[in-house]
Amino acid sequence: MAAAAPPPRALVIGGSLGGLFAASLLLRAGWDVEVFEQSATPLAGRGAGIITHPDLFAALERIGIATAEGIGVDIEGRVAFGRDGAVLGTLPVRQCLTTWGRLHELLLAAFPAERYHLGHACHRIERDTGGVTAHFANGASACGDLLVGADGIRSAVRAQLAPETAPRYAGYIAWRGLADENALTPQTHRDLFPKFAFSLAPREHMLGYPVAGFGHSTRAGERAFNFVWYRPAHAQRELPGLCTDIHGRRHDMAIPPPLIRPEVITAMRAAAREQLSPQFAEVVERTKQPFFQAIFDLESARLDFGRIALLGDAAFVARPHVGMGVSKAAGDALALAALLRESGNDVASALPRYSAQRLRFGRAVVAHARELGAYLEACAAGGTAATERHTPEAVMRDIAVTRAF
Image (tube, rainbow, N blue to C red; front, side, top):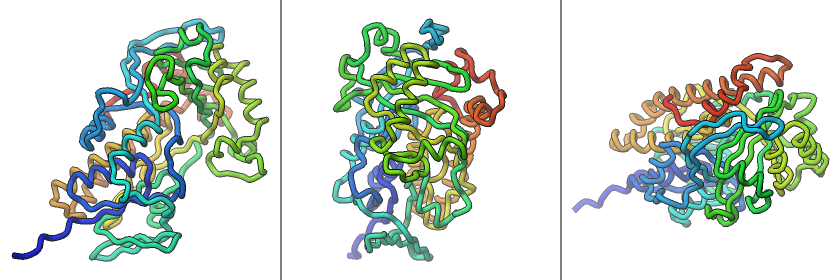
């Protein structure tokens, strides 16, 4: 009796959420899967708030992760505050809001630890008709039938295959952070919990919502309030200074939070007191370690490179206004696994179909995110276009809501 053929083998480059979605779905479909993450230390605990959408829940359920409870904080409505703290409007919108750390913890627990490798930075890829080989900076290498590039906006995989595809700075940054709910005054707590809240300053845009707190607890009294504050930062005049750390080293898109210069945070807190509603100014003040990220667009022209597929932020990065980054990565992983299954694991047949399907989706999401950020981009460039996007009604209706693309 002939021996059974070995299962097809997949190499997933990138051990964050997109990589774990892809790896877990392929593993459940019968693939032999290994994940290679460039960081030498565990990623758990990085990141902040996440908006959930149907694709995210579909991927979790397909992997076998229960979503009935413990994923995040449920809210039923939105509220916009004026500069004086008065309510400018409300809108009933039901959502579940979670954190990067909680999702990563769940996905990592569901994936075999012996198949997840830290300290493996991919620096070279070789392809031929028989397979694909990844070479790592630590001297290791791995061979497979499929390689999934899920290594984020700075993707080393994409840089080797499509070096012309690069992030485009949008002209503004997002300050982010988490404030423990028990650190807030009773009045601010009543105003913000459990709501998705907004505060619109001239040329700027602040939003926030409750998420799981320390230890990923969603119990009342143990949650946190996550904020995202969009502020213009000129590419030449302001961004270099913001991205220079306490040691004088210049960073590209963001700085590890402990390395942000104290005077930068002091200036940011002062601006919050001057420009934001009192509720949000307090949240910023009570956040122990705020951090920021420069806002970029990224669009790939193709996602299929023979035996290699791009996925998640390695493929497309939409501005956070749509709240779709993690759900889009989950959708990419679902589509890849489904198309491989339909093709009988014929990589050459499945990947062009995957590319065509997810290119359409990624382009639509990026375009919509640009529309939502048009006012902020115009302000960063010294203009006043798209002011219709900067009203309480518009932001409550359009920002980070589930919609068809």
